[in-house]
Every structure is written in structure tokens, then in C-alpha cells.
Length: 90
Image 1 (tube, rainbow, N blue to C red):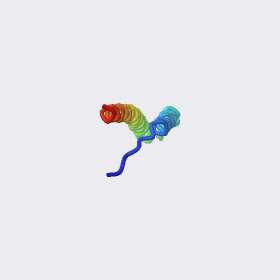
Image 2 (spheres, rainbow, N blue to C red):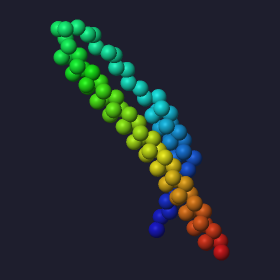
Image 3 (tube, one colour):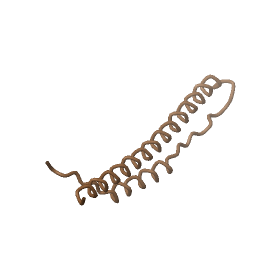
Image 4 (cartoon, helix red, strand yellow):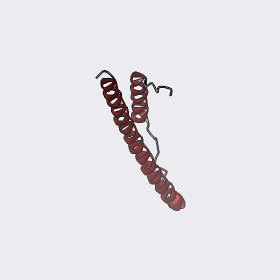
């Protein structure tokens, strides 16, 4: 059976990079011009903008949760590895 090696430092480094990338995500949506002739168009654009903002916020939240979950799994694997090593040393 081959051994699975977990490079915790590399995983943590990638998670830090992912967190930085998530934090730096932003979306620039300009307000549309207003006027009677383009009122319907403006309303549709505003609706699309709101939907995009909600999608973007949900994506950020899910990505942050993914990072947290991954950190917990890495910590759990590290603890299991330590316990296994201790059991072999008994």
C-alpha cells in the first residue's frame, strides 16, 4: 500500500492565496442613465445588476466556506496522522 503524504504547508499557502483572491474580487456596475425613453431598459438593467450582485455575494460566501472547510479537513488529517504515528511508537 502506498502512503499518502500531506504537504500541509503547501495546502495552507494555497488556501491563503485563495482567500486573498476571494477578498480581492469585486464587481463594478455602473448605474444606467435615466430618462423617460429608456425607463424600461433602466429597470431591466437595475434588475440584472441586483441579480449579479446577489450571485457574486453568494459565490464569495461559498468560496469562503470552502476555504474554512478545507482548513478543518487539513487540520483533521494532520491530527489523524499524528495519532497514527503515536500508535506505531507504542
